[in-house]
Length: 320
Image (cartoon, helix red, strand yellow):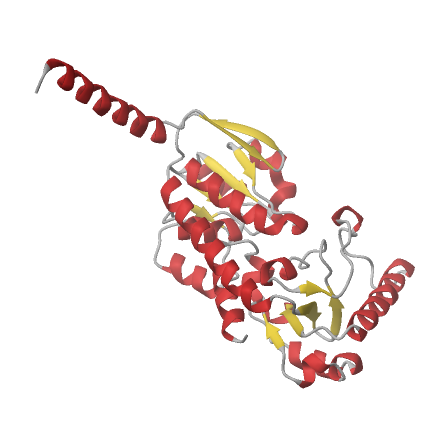
């Protein structure tokens, strides 16, 4: 080999090595999140996670959290953590500060229900908020996969998950093209719809179906619970009833149902509640058994997790 060829070969090898090093030398890493930005100087080794959707995606990436909240579901996630050593860091709403101080996490990840604990948790350890906006749901899921891949040096695995998600979405949407659906939320004997922009209104985007109700601005959705007998609560129930009646008159081809009662291990009454509603019972979708029941804990508690989303897509594809 001539000197020129040896030099060229060495330069090519050096260039390849530098590219390989740069692909992994992501730190310090700047992370933009729901409540600001955070720079990590190195990959975290002890992570506390308060959002079960994030925990689901971390599990898909092969990453175990050192601290997790009390597990209320879904079953596949509880099973994964049943045999793992992890610290109970409280509930989705109330962090256990003593447990967190003992754990000394390098990073705390919050989202959804736990997002209002940002200031408290930030005082204990670096904290990021990976909440997903309902009107940007799939973009949020993809973003979280990418961010988590970068944080834990799992970029290749994250890219694979995103590719698999894209493939499954395309397959389902090819089957559902032109179909319409209405998302219904049941809790005990109560029934309400969720339009795009509301908490579970992303199901049209996920399933590739046309909504039969107009989208709403997420900023206009009331936060918190109203006193049941207050004038505001009565007015809200009347508006919800009118919206539901109007939506059912559009004859959606599918009813997509989330049964809140069954989400945390209680007795589900979704089918009973739907059957008692005259408008639902008279609908073509109900009479043709075009009712798709979401896995309750996945969607109510672990919203936005990769595995739960993939399971839902496969289940819906199977009934098309």
